Length: 286
Image 1 (tube, rainbow, N blue to C red):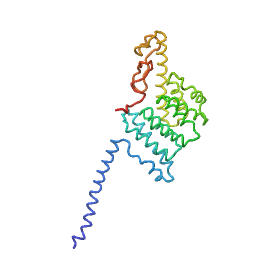
Image 2 (cartoon, rainbow, N blue to C red):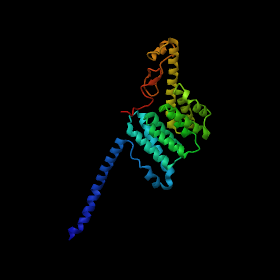
Image 3 (cartoon, rainbow, N blue to C red):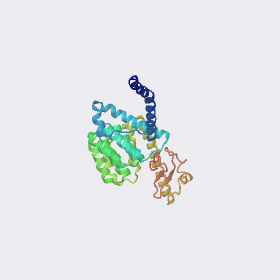
Image 4 (cartoon, helix red, strand yellow):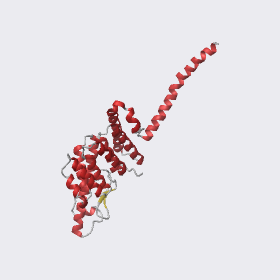
């Protein structure tokens, strides 16, 4: 009889002793998984939006901070990211902009990372079209869509259409309308890229994105200057230089510039100049 009365106390004692040990083991496994994935888990927007109730703005800000901090850490440490990270950035941005449909910084950062670093123009343009639908007064979503279609997709018809929409919305720089009407005659893909990045720097508030944009703008300007020097060399000699060092030998440049992304510049067979870094700190193709 006494033994039966002691059984509950004995079980309780076992729980007190072993429960913390078991919980510690679970926590260690959880942290190992999070460390391995790096990204954690993002709740789909169809569930996170209703669950957020009146705290949607706060939660969207928190998720944006999480996304930008994660990206910044990867770039600072120069750690490789693969294509699964592109899906993470898209999903995170989709949730953030569902919670706050007007959150331009989230649209901008995610679309830039997806287009420039992962070459996922399908996802980048999907987010920009979402921004275009929600921010009906804003010229920037169709403006950046126009750039993506021109620079990355080489689709001047759609590029002109979106730039026309940006011009009609008003509030943007004066060059948008002339750029839209003369897009098909641009010989260099870099001129609109420089204009775009300069405009992005004027409208971006996020310190991390400002630093990122400065680096990208610096690299594009170097490419543009080198391409002009290659053309000058061809006009002078009747042929393209075999390598960029020939420009220095011909006194067209003082020194070979350094790629801000850590790569090396080289000449393509058509006279364009590119870099082994592909204008990104990491290679998602691996």
